[in-house]
Length: 298
Length: 288
Image 1: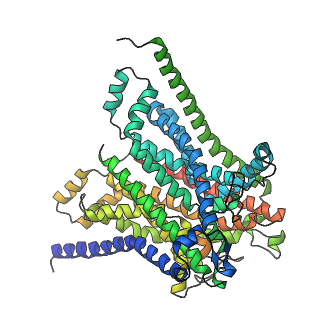
Image 2: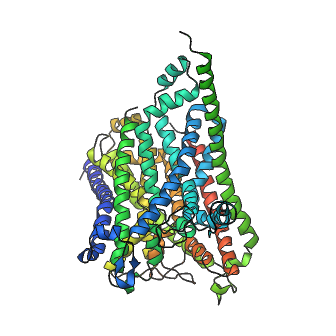
Image 3: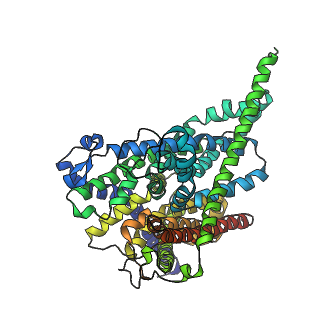
């Protein structure tokens, strides 16, 4: 065998191996979906998906698995997080791309880096140390008679800060795909930088902004430990932001130990995981495809 | 045509208001970052003792008696170390397959990148739940190995996507020069690898940071234990879970140890994050 065919053989075999590894890691998405669904399917023999999602009673010992309080908990917490994080991240990203000198950027990015790097359990610790007491002692009494502090609001605040770095970095990425010429034209016509930001940059980036929010929502939906530590974990439908709640990831995390002891309990929890997976999958796919288009068009 | 002075004023008032909002937002970003670190470090510093970092939980640890959380520190190091190595073994070939072996317009590459993005977005609790069902299916118990596998799955998409970004920026000329000299694609990979060593380092640090902080994934799969595991089949404690469990205890002494452990974890993560930024800055200067 001469040296060239040896080289080609090496190239082919390694290529095959690399292809195999790539496909294997790709298949994880499919295997995960199928695996989770199969584990949760026993529950469908007794109840339909719609029943489970709309029922309000959660009594695993009696085989009553109502997801509605948990779904509502997730929705509330996520909503608060987005309401807090969206304006802050939008203004920050606009400032970074349209206003800031590079000196400012040099200090802002490390701060965002740190926020992104902190583990969720640390956010949880901070939440119990600072946010929860603040709500129960300072903010809560202004609005309601009593609140423990472990509330929708606490979870929303913590989660909002957690998704800030993701939002800012994606916004910055989208805004920088707007061509420089557009900025120059707008400024040359006498617009202020703010008019440029709203009427050119944000208008042009609208699909991207939307996709980014969807992505941030999907990130917020799955956040577990930090939320679990500050949300109160009471399976009820929250009526105000000063009520405790119980989002879906917290449900899964809190009950994993006992789930094998009761019939259908495991299936119910796995169904919760499946729902999370499917929602996150759909949200991620749509927003990533939109974001891909935007960065390609520049 | 001249616009009225009133309209003019409105335009500048809006501009100033927006500027104020931006400064406030920037301030908020800084304030959050500093407030979190300050609160965790200050509280942890009050609680931490040398004994906590260097000893295993003693008798009655969870009712506030003596001992430390060395088991959690070592457990985390085991899991993070092993899964980082496994992750690199899987993600480096995948990245080069996508970038060198496949064409730029390849459908497979598009789908693959999309899939990794989606996997990156899947919450770690779902990874945990999935790995747990997998482990039950093959008759495995919660163990160090389970934790390693879950964490590996969790960091593969992060590694691949962040290395991918770096490899994408390698100029086409480098490939062309390499092919023109008659190299095969595999030999070109060896060339490209040298260009992106810093990218691999950053990706690794990023994954280590994510892996060390992950609690929801290992909760199902690694279990918890008061001793340092001596084999892959034993359960192991991890730092985030140790913080979580101790903080939910009613005794103040136990909670204080949670704050101390949070202090340790925060310092580790901060060092990793700073190191990552340092590497990016240092190496981005010397690339072709």
